[in-house]
Length: 356
Ligand code: SF4
Ligand code: SF4
Image 1 (cartoon, rainbow, N blue to C red):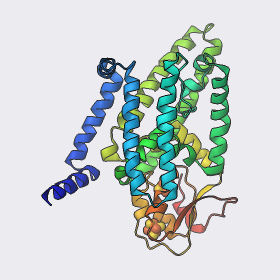
Image 2 (image 1 turned 120 degrees about the vertical axis):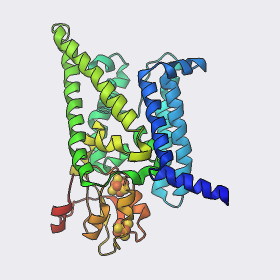
Image 3 (image 1 turned 180 degrees about the vertical axis):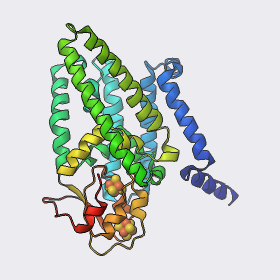
Image 4 (image 1 turned 45 degrees about the vertical axis):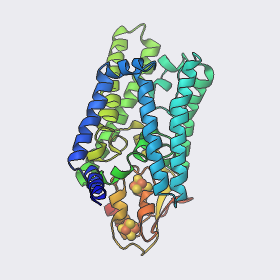
């Protein structure tokens, strides 16, 4: 009984910003700082016979998704959407984000990640790097980024990528599941998110344009090539290492699991714009909501789902990653994720609550 009591205290402390949550945050932040800024993990990888720190990180990341995925599969085993989604995200991480690139490397082929597209992965789109790869990869990258990503985003919403394919979403929805309620629901957080995610997207678009220009004219304009290289280095450090790694994953235990996806990811920003013009929506059953607030509490993107349910308004929000947890936790079955053929006319109440 005493052990049960201690375990329950620890679980509560970890998931409610207690001392252990802050300690774990410190450990995770230190882990990412060491990973990105020192040789510690490179040496550890070599010591166990791996070729790089990224292979070691890939193993740890995949194990976290697998272990968290088993936990989530058990927790939501009654919900077919959650079971299939979780199984797919585990499969994509292990096979396409880890095994396939490692097998390609083993056979001295170019390392390639089939589950990542521009603007999340610049290397697989910009001419300086993509044109060094075989034609099949070039076509896959361009068709995937310019056609597949927006088309699927229009048809089924950003969920197809953010909740079914991407490794960042994969970690959030598996190992991070017990922490999803920590996402800030404040209006200040929402105001920050609206600006920050579009600023990162704009910077990413500018960097992409510069990389194309430097590839075409860099030999004749060395200043442009130097500036682009410095810009790219700064982007890799600030956006990729600091915002997606140190902040995005390091702050899970105190800030929730989608800090990166919600505030900084350029792919989420782009897919959010596509989603707003597409068919995906969360349908609300009229006059069923009892205002318990569970949907808002467990929304990992900080969306006030209850406000829409109370207003009897089906909705599409750019931020929504279609995780489906609001529908899962609702005790009245009020919410349903759907790809509507036509968009309902906004109701008067929406004018007040509609946001991004
Ligand atoms: S609104 Fe629902 S489906 Fe969308 S992110 Fe929030 S919990 Fe997930
Ligand atoms: S969980 Fe369901 S009943 Fe509770 S506030 Fe949300 S929509 Fe309403």
